[in-house]
Length: 294
Ligand code: FVH
Image (cartoon, rainbow, N blue to C red; front, side):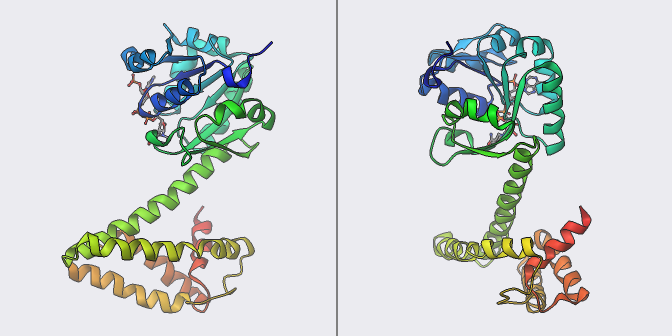
């Protein structure tokens, strides 16, 4: 009989910062954990915690019905698993390596051609967050495969099933990262501006955090506008006004010696939208221009 989920054996391939965190979470939860890394001594701390160090990748795969890969990129996943595709047959590979949706779809086809189940994943956490309440991980692939391993995967963080289409986890991962980098871009620019006027961080950061929190409440309405295509719905601050005011942001930055690069692209999109006759609508309409370029 298969081991209960609470004691199911797991293999982790790739013991960089993230792989080490994943393996540690499995060990902490009591799973028999086999590990492999191209540079073997990275397994030492995990062996000290009770992990089994596999001599080669085929032995690592053979040790568990569930194999987690978290390596640099998809090319290194293929390179790593090339000698072990036979051993993977009948098992499940969960690939938590970051990649594109197209790479995920290709990997799912590769798995099917070798007779093993495949889930693609996107980790929404940094290594110290793994196994904590902050972490969540996106998965896509066959629902039955996800359900069969869900309890074990929950050891790493909340498991969110993104859908059966194999590229969905990677797509949502990249969409969420886009939101993160957009936020960080704004924060970097704001900090540079405040610093250019010698405003102490202790004074500015509470204002910035409060402002970002208030503005984030607009996201659901923006998403509704994108879904409906109705950018005139519930307009409070139209894009015509915002495009004009945005010029101040760019000019003030130049005057303070702060490069406006992170915001010039958005200004161009706003102006294009206004020139297209949408000045009375909401800022969210720039999504239409982004879509047109896809
Ligand atoms: N760390 C993070 O914050 C992010 C969070 C979101 C998900 N990413 C992705 O996770 C993958 C691994 O990232 P990582 O943080 O573990 O990265 P490193 O610490 O740099 O470790 C890289 C591991 O990959 C192995 N490796 C590299 N090339 C090969 C290869 N050709 N064949 C076999 N293994 C390879 C490397 O092995 P070694 O250098 O120790 O021998 C490490 O185990 C990644 O997709 C992130 O985007 C992390």
